[in-house]
Structure formats: C-alpha cells, structure tokens
Length: 337
Image (cartoon, rainbow, N blue to C red; front, top):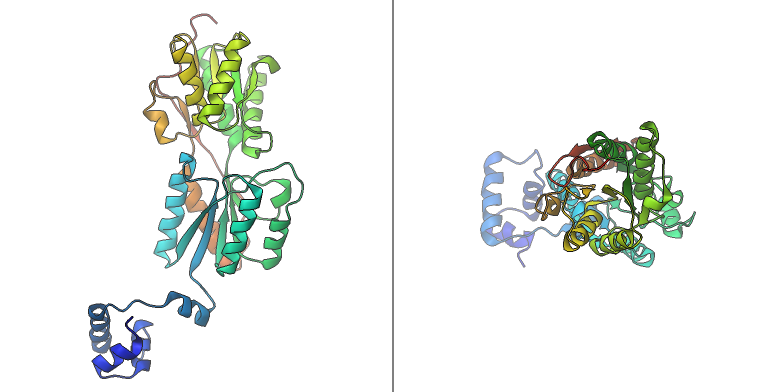
C-alpha cells in the first residue's frame, strides 16, 4: 500500500507538504498541488478513510436501513439518497431489516458501531407502543430520518412520507368517476400506518360520494404479490359483488389481477383494478396498471434535505409529499353500475 511517506520521497518534499496537498490546504502553491496529485494518482495512492474519520471525528458515512431491496418501492428512494450523499462526499452503507424487529435492532447497532454521521431508516412497524432500540437511538443523538410514517414507538424522529390518505382518496375518486359504486379494497397490514391511511382515504372518498362503506368488500391482503393472490381468491370464493378492486399497493394489485385473468375475467371489462405506488412492473403488467404515482425519488431527496438540516443542528419538519393518479388500461367504466 502506498503511503504519504512514499509520495513525499518520490516528490522530494516533506510528508506534511503531501498531507496539505491532499487536504487542499491554501498555503501550498498551485503548481506543487498539481505535481503531487498527479504523482499520487500514478503511484495508486488510496486515502485511509477510517483514519481520516478518526482525525476529523466524521466518518463521512450514512447508514441506510430498508425492508428489502427486492421491494421495488425503495429502488429510486435509495438512488436519490445515494446520489445526494455522493455529491457532498459521503458514502452510504445499506442494510435490510426484512421486516424483522430483531434484525432491525442488529443493523442499527452495527451502524452505530461504525460511527455513522446519520441514519435513514424504514421502520419495522409493529403494534407495540415502545421499541427499546429507538429509545436508545434517540439517546445517542445520531441524526436520524425515518423513511415513512411515524408510529408510537418512533414519534420523536424526523420523517418524510407520502400523503397516503389524500393519494388513496384520489384513487377511489377515480373509480367513482368512472361509475363504480361497488369497490372492493385489498388492505395492508394493520401495523402499517401507510396501509391504514390508504384505507382511510378510500373510506373518505366513499362517504363524500354517498356510497355506503361495506366491510364485506374489505379483504386483508398484506403487501406482496402472493398475498394479493390470496385476497383475490378469497374475494372470488365469497362471491363479492365488486365491479372494481383498489389495492393497498401495486404488488397486491398485480397478484389479484393475475387471479382474475387466470379465472377468465377480463380487465377492465369485467372488473377494474387499481394499484398504488407505480413500481416499474405495473407499467409492464399483462394489463398495464392504473395506479398512484408515488414520489419515490422526491422522498429520497426530501430525506437528504432533512438530514442536512439535522447535521447543521436545525430541526426540520415532517415532509409529506402528494402523489397523483396515473391512468392506464386496467380501469374503465363498469358494464353494469
């Protein structure tokens, strides 16, 4: 490994001079800087980031904890955070909680042991009012931004989120404007604040339109394609009279739509299907999916803005971003209202 001492010997200068050049100190001439930087590149010098972090008390490092990179919701959010971090000279280390509290706790402790300058966390939602690891994180005072809604166990942290009530309300309004009055809802997990907000948006749109809310048209689906399939099978087995289905997310909508198509139903002629999220798969599904375009990249940008404020000692407010309906081929007016 090439050391500062090696570069100094080759350049005929002191180690201090080389160190100042690599730190871009102002008291070194431009010509000397050009010569030593070129020499360091030719010799293959790689800075010791860990040692630099110990000296500056900043690792220039962020920890980013998401549920799973297989969930397409997080891809653009992670990209936005990494791009903005790169621009300010920070690196990002990624962890996956797999929606397991014990794994979430393990990763947060690992990030803290790496002396990260800040944390971005998609919380593992649970019904518990308290989560010791979040209490511990708060005591450490590490700048932390939650990627998603707050819950009782993480109320005291800064967060960025989608306006899920308003966005789901718009999705239901889209189906109502097409003439649907019997709209089934494939709901998410009870512990997820975003899932509960999307159900609430659906309720509000029905109420405003004078359409009765019917529990028999609500099916618990979770968050995955397989869970969407199971909810659709239950819906068909119970002979639900819905002319349209609104799903908590695109994956659930795709799972349900596959069942409908495999059972011989035509989308949207026999039943309309509405998703939420606008993941890439939704556009290229067998019947391109009408959905809500969730501001995934903008959420990542907003998260980094909040992180910069925290690092600067400021207290940012929650950023709640709106979404919009993106109409494709999976929704149309019902044949029979």
